[in-house]
Image (cartoon, rainbow, N blue to C red; front, side, top):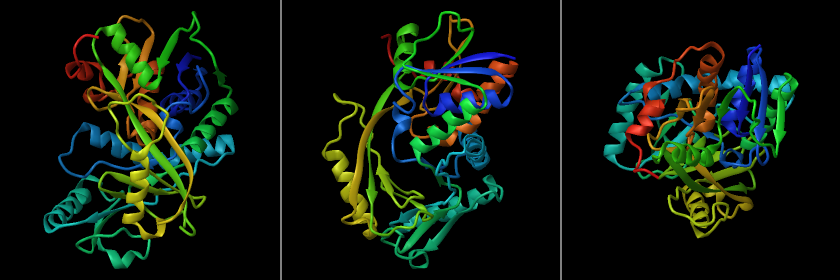
Length: 356
């Protein structure tokens, strides 16, 4: 059996460890702090697609990952005995002007062709969806049936439980071993910084995001999530509703929350009356890894034989994790390179900043 060391206990690292173990590899996962210590351990849990137009390799990859997500998370639940909170509950988006309505209808036609009946992008009247539906200036909404949600920390706990149930080792507070053999670095924004230092180019950076978890009086957990003016509103199965996130390129305190988060909470109440006055049960902040190419970053670490990079999830990490893990397992276990061109290190280098 192949022996793999995975560095990082976030979404990517745990998904890869689980996938490799399912294929019969020996796996140890090392997290220098604790499972979910990075941006994966937030509250939002939105798994949402790109719009069905101007199709490219990245959008196709994401579509395939979202379609395989249900089976992936059910397998993790079955092996670990823990719930992930996964549900393909769909998403609503308000349409606020005539041009937006025309564009939404064009995209509905695009989804019919590109999503091939696996999911739908519909244009519907707001009143047909009840009190949870967001305000819309035109009275029309986009309703896609591809978007899903999960509870991030619960999903990570289920993956960690599945890794251990399959015989994998998890070490928290550990350091990279000297005799690691094949090593995959899934270490978030700190990993991007280390890669940048090693290559002498700014291959990526961290973007701070703040989010909150609300407890409204009564919001069924099977309601669709809502996306309005860059704001995600995500109902979870336990009746809580997550709201987020900010995108801050410049920040001093990576884990602090401030008035920008309070503004998001206020906007959520404006968009969805059911959230007005809801109790805030958790506020959190973290730094998400953003590659210079704005795509996931996969492949060999240049100059380090046997070392690989799996990073750059940014806002789509949970949605991309199932297929990214499959693709990386193909590479490190079988030598099969199916990495999309946009996800390769070369693509990030082409857009990288000046020497560090």
